[in-house]
Image 1 (cartoon, one colour):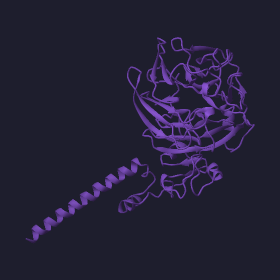
Image 2 (cartoon, one colour):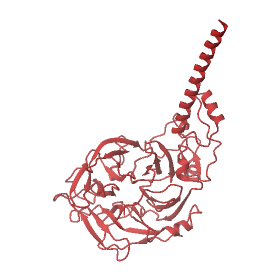
Image 3 (cartoon, one colour):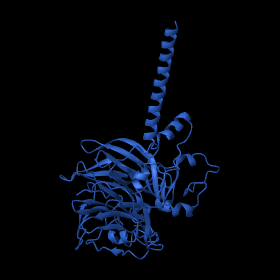
Length: 436
């Protein structure tokens, strides 16, 4: 009888141990996928397991000098919910947020920013938004090209004068990356493309050249995609400027799918909303230009204002920023969409399975790119925001102002367009492979 009781007790104890071990394994798996397992010892895990309601303590992890924690648990309940604008979390100020501009919302962001990330202002154009969109890196000369804002009142561009394309030397930016403010120490040159790209806005690499999206000007200069030579004599030629006889609205952004090599671009009515384009004659849509046959097809018409476009590194997914909340001269309508949508790229190059990938936290998302691991970066109302492929916000490169666009300029280097401020960042991430 005693032997039977002992065996029964041992069986019960074994079942309890198995249950505890199983629960512990699940806890470890959860912490791993939540980003909380790295750099933690088993005692931390056991402590968390003993109190499943506890929040992982990451304070013991050393952060780079220009980084600070901004964990979600600190802001899910606020003593006062501010009106929608630039979000300043309790216990912080705009100055403190700018002092350490790499905001870590998730531990995986540490892998992205690396051991010693830096953010440097390298140019300031006063009130003229010279640093707006179309950033494209040209590796042979290690230069990055970008454009002035088209249609902005402060720029005087749009109907009577086209915005211009410019460039800077990346090595010059690298040489001052140890400074926080290096204004005037990096030369900004206007690039004389010929014929000029009229009101440029988006850009991408293409077989050793660039493709720029031009928004057009009035009714006589239709929006177009331009193939541009990145070196002198900076000659250009048009790739497409109409949809079967109808002018586009204002071609906004362009990207090349790395899987099929085709050219995709977005078309939206911002030229009309900024008074330099006539009334639209097409819906706001995304298009595909077949690189071989030149066949032009619409692939998406399900957004109010389709804006930035990019692809995952393997070309399986397309990401388009929806800026329906921004109506240009008509202002912001905060209740309208301001997110990023993901599409599956079908084998035939069409888009399917539209899915909300993320809703941005400040204003809208504009320019969008991926790194080589498939993380998604977007220029937003407070800087560059970064999500993992599942749409989890990992962190921000905080500029305290709208960063309409940005671009990787080689491994661990990034240029950021801040309208009147131009920034250069060093970090740990690498951009997705260029379309050559």
